[in-house]
Image (tube, rainbow, N blue to C red; front, top):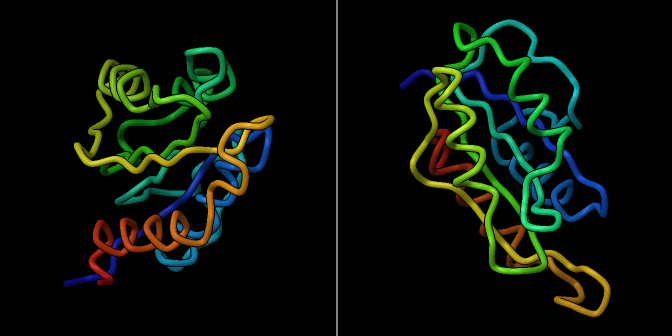
Length: 141
């Protein structure tokens, strides 16, 4: 099987999603970049990370999705963090699919540290799980 061309893009205010992005990029053999970094050329798999703030995905992520060229992306894989249980996946999946961009059904989520909630998250176990998730979706496991 040929190695897929992979990109990792994320938005992170607190650094929680950045930690996941870097773990995923390490496992996928690429570099993570914070949005609005463009996608160079075409990619088979775009890992797109976000956090949930006040019950929704940030405007930066919503705007970035609008810039994506469906002809240059094989599929998007969503990963996210939040202090509460709500995930970014349903909101991002709908926006991406409305643009005609395929979205992987599997997504990765973990708690993120916020104020006194979930201190230390994502932790080493979360980062190891994110790497394993990326390996499974890029055929590296």
